[in-house]
Image 1 (cartoon, rainbow, N blue to C red):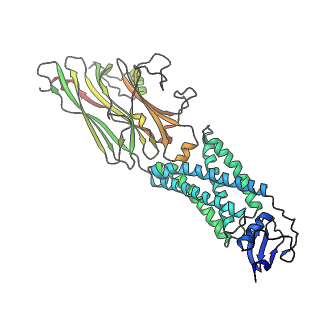
Image 2 (image 1 turned 90 degrees about the vertical axis):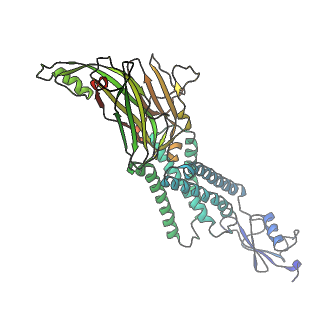
Image 3 (image 1 turned 180 degrees about the vertical axis):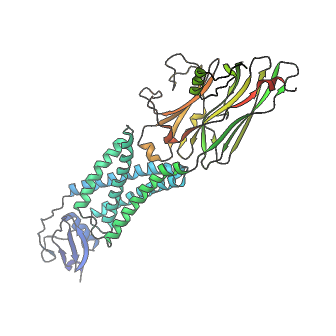
Length: 481
C-alpha cells in the first residue's frame, strides 16, 4: 500500500491529554498537539503536509481534531520545578559528601560521604526521568526513578535540618536547606498525585529497599559522627623527669637535665593543641620543733591540691625555666609515637631553695573528631601590632602567643549546619609565672573570638598533665662537675 493511502487513527486523549497514534494498525507514538501529531506521522513515513481533516485517511476516536487538552505550560513548569529541585539537591549532596568521601579520617565517615555522593548521582538520573515521566513515558521505570529522587531529598533534608536544629545557627547553607524542604513537600505531593509508583513490578520490595538505604545512611552518620569517635581508645602518657645534675667547675651553676616524654599509647592520632613545661625552685621555712599540722595551712594546701608538711612551710616559688614541650602547635602524633625531648636547665647553686620541681602539660585534640586548618601553625605575637588582629586583650595583659585556625568536624554534615568554629591556644609569660589555655568558639560579628565557647568534648580536646617531679636542691649543690 502506498504512503498516500495509509490509514491513521488518533485515539481519545488520556488523563494527561496525550493521544495515541497508530498508522495502518501499528503504534506510531503519541501526540500532545497537532504539531506533535505531524512529527509522529513524519517519523512513520507520511508526508509532512498530510491533510489531518481528510476523514478517509485520518480517523479521530473519542474526540475530534480540535480536542487537545494538554496544558503544555503547566506541564513544562512542573517538569522545570522538579528538575531544578533535584539538580540543586544533587549539587548540595555532592558538595557535602565529596569532602568526606575524599578526605575524612575514618572509614565510616568516608562511607557516609560516598553515600551522599551516590544519592546525588541518583538525583541526576531522576532529572532525566522527570523529563520522560512528565513527557511521553517511554521508559518503564521513569516514575520509580522520580520517586526515589524526591524521597532522597526528603530524607537528606530531614537529616540536615535535624542536625542544624541542635544549634540553630545561621549558615550560608540554611536558605538552601529551607528552600529544598519546601520543595520536597511540593514534590512529594506532585509525585503522589501522579501515582509515580504505579508500574513498579515489586512495590513492597522497592519500598523496603528505599527504607533500608535511608536507615543505613542515618545509622552510618550516627556511627561516624558520634559512636566511633567516642569508642576508640584515646590515651597518652606524659611525664617530666630530672636527670643527673652536673656542677659547673667555674661558675656557681648546676646543669640539671629535664626529660620530657609524650607517648601515644591509644588507638587514635591527635593534634598537639598546646604544650608547656615548668621548672620551679621552692623556698621554705623549716621548723623541727613542730608537733602538729597547721590547720590554716592545711586548708590552703587542700584548695591548691598540694601536700601539707609538718616541719616545712613553703614561702615562695621561683619560675626557673618554661617553654613548649613540642615545638609547633598543631603537630600530629600518631598511635605508637614515643616523643622525647631533653632540656638542660641552669640552676644557681647559691640560692636558698630547698626543692627543685618540674611538671608538664599538653592539650590534644582527637584526630578522628576533626581537622585543624594549616593556619593554626603560624603564631600571633601580642607585642607585634597587626591591623584586623583576630584577638586582642580588652584590658592590660601579659605578653602572649596565640595560635588559631578553623577546626572542621570529621563529618561534613556538622560543618555545613553550623557556623565555623575556631580552635585557639594561648600561651603567656609574666615576670614570675607562665601558663597556657585553649578554647573552641565561633567568631563574633566583628570577626573576633566570641565568648560563646564550645564544649571541648565535642571535638575531643583533652588536657594531660604529668605528675610533679621533685629533686632536693642539696643534690644540685653537691653535684660533681
